[in-house]
Image (tube, rainbow, N blue to C red):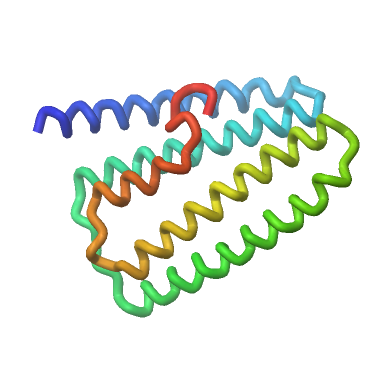
Length: 159
């Protein structure tokens, strides 16, 4: 029980850190005129919002009882995830084809970052689909592993 309490405390503190990052970056964005810097910092802010949600999801997994889904909800989620797996793959292909034509190093840097995100999204969605198909047999530990495997820096500053 002690380890669970430590983990919950850690997760809650990380939510606070992520929320601070969002607030801090959003306050600074109005003053930044460079579109590459502004876009990158906005992306980091959005990632921090996502990280806070993922920490909250981990807390929910550790403290609550998951609701069983009706088959129609399961089918709808499966269809949604399958569609987004296709979309991510299309984006990966398009960006990969376009990036080799780009001469501007700054644009290449941004497209590389986007491509890396799209590849992580694609892998994460494939794992989520696996869970949906697997259904009720997934453990909280498996969920936690899937949630955090693809998150760079695991919510620490810099991610």
